[in-house]
Image (tube, rainbow, N blue to C red):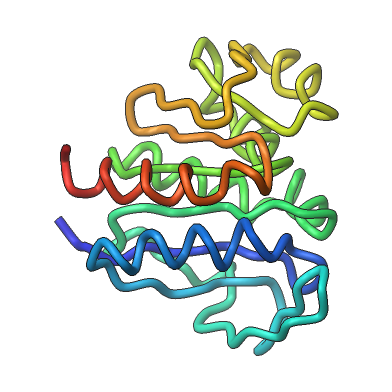
Length: 171
């Protein structure tokens, strides 16, 4: 299996901790990362940090990646009903790869139809949104159900990154 992880961030206003801390944990475990976004070469975090984008979300193929990480923050709303984001989540899921999301981003997974009957967690403001799509929200900081990993928000970023890395490792 490929040992590369794809991060999906909003073009602007993605949450710093959810990207940088999660990415640090995954890279510290020995995995390569790439970052996708929509229509930009650089994306900007909530705090104004700029990052380079490797690929447009519309061009991503699941081949070559072990996992996808959808990063939250206010900007992630752009993806909640975005056909490319929903298709990406669904294609990773159908390929048996790890699909993960933090903060409000689990709503993307719910809207893609892959959280029905799954134990999940999400930022508290979005709990009803994912439950209305059949998700079973546990309220934990990080929740794993099969190949789906969800996290509640910025304070869970390190644990989320470690959980994704462990799942890729098969441990």
